Length: 226
Image 1 (tube, rainbow, N blue to C red):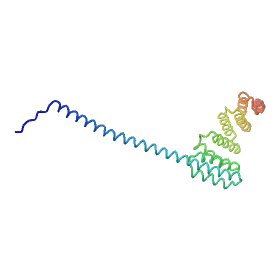
Image 2 (cartoon, rainbow, N blue to C red):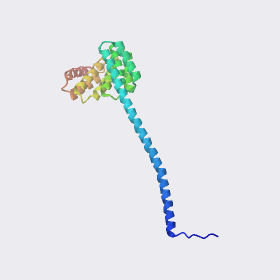
Image 3 (cartoon, rainbow, N blue to C red):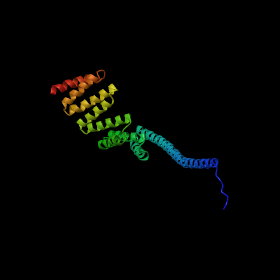
Image 4 (cartoon, rainbow, N blue to C red):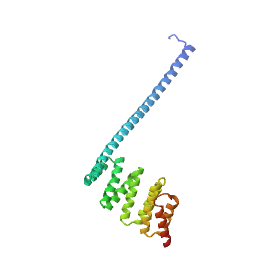
């Protein structure tokens, strides 16, 4: 039989320390790998976001340039060319502000050519898909109201003009102008109760605007029919 070797307490303590250290090192290695993988994933996500942001910015710039070219053609009286360029812009750069503006401008172009059904389609497309820009929203709503007025849908047109006025209540002159447009349509529709109410609204809320005298006259007219 071989000679037994007695393990001292110090050796046992040393072996336990090594085992604990080994376990700790393994734990750190395992979790460090997970951390590094997670960090790599975050870096990839950030890189993708930056790339997308740059791409979107480049797309917006290209759309803005195309919009300027189309508008220049329109201002030069090249209506067919401008229409084709607006349509091409919408196809090439969907979702951009340039495409939103092009949709509105196509509506205005069709309206000026008295193609009211096509104009309404463009304005409705903008309002359904592109809302969010204050200026373009107003252009599309006013364009739609103008189309409905031409189509003799006076009550609907008046409602839109009132809606625009509510959106511009911090611009007294603009708000009163839109309410006056609503009154114009309500008078044709012979809705004298609404004429009186909207006229009174101008008198009460916008007394310092150019339309207050007209509102007083339409109020008196409406009261004579009630």
